[in-house]
Length: 460
Image 1 (cartoon, rainbow, N blue to C red):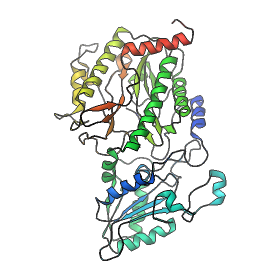
Image 2 (cartoon, one colour; image 1 turned 180 degrees about the vertical axis):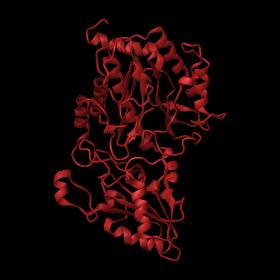
Image 3 (cartoon, rainbow, N blue to C red; image 1 turned 90 degrees about the horizontal axis):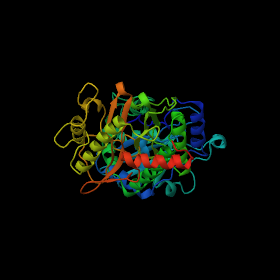
Image 4 (tube, rainbow, N blue to C red; image 1 turned 45 degrees about the vertical axis):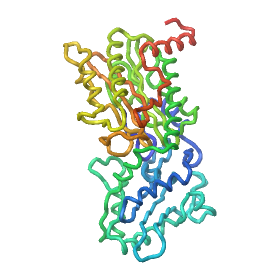
């Protein structure tokens, strides 16, 4: 459970100067991005799958690079655009057009790129241009045209199709109004054409991961696991929350993770009960419980892992009691997870209900009430190009989906929050835990923390 990654760049954090300086060192790179593309054939297959589901052209727009002007943020492409093109530079557009009845030729795929600006490239690094030699082979498109030609192409398509698909704004849109800006642009170019939202169809495709996508998620998970192990070994009273986060982000970068998947959460004491806590200013005290929800992204694909640690290396009896209840709930969900189960809701196949019923039937608060009321968020979400990935969250699980299982109990009156979160691949018969290398049981967690104390030469 954490804030969504910003759609225009790595999330902005409210952190002390030390952590911000660490982030700057991690995020600033030459050129636009260090992302490694998957093979062109994979993006082409995705476009082919989408075209097979539509009866009219699809027009999509990448980000312009002006959506966020903070100096320490690196450009990240609009997710659906990146999913279909693998193109991670500013100012591009995409047209997918079904065959036109009565005309020669089949479906068309056109990537539109802005003309190169050599003066700007002296500051920002080389970019692809529509007239570059070999640009078709490099991008995987048979047609690459200047962005200035897009309006003319859209007008021409409107003569054959009464409808165009694009990303349209929804009531929940926040931040830079990307979809509003470009849907308004389309309406201006072809005022009589019906616009229909394509977001749901792309989201459904994104929910089933390819082997290449799963491999990238696994790389992100592996680096995130190593960062959590480092946090377990370094954890002790006297550290500041931001110091733990900074060390974890260093591990991510050192292992080649190209970006953070979301703003890191390291919350000690009462802060462990704040779901989206991101201030990271508190000093960790003896006796605190500390929630660490920190994960990186590899070439755009996110990991999402949470562990809860005792600050001094030993759970108190009450902390261990709540921890084992949350762990039991996670194990119950893992056992129930398989194709056909639903991550959300309270129906007969709901994984959320499995967790809620377990937590509600184990343990009490100080007043003797059951603990179900302290599970205040969902227990699963898809991960991929976004840490809360696209698609219908109520869609039954299918092989190839990658999602989290993350029950939690948060009792503010006791300054006690516990969340345990791991990442899973749905198989034909159940799930595979991608983050299984990271200890979950309280005894295993304490053992790793004891190794850290021994390495520091401390017996406490």
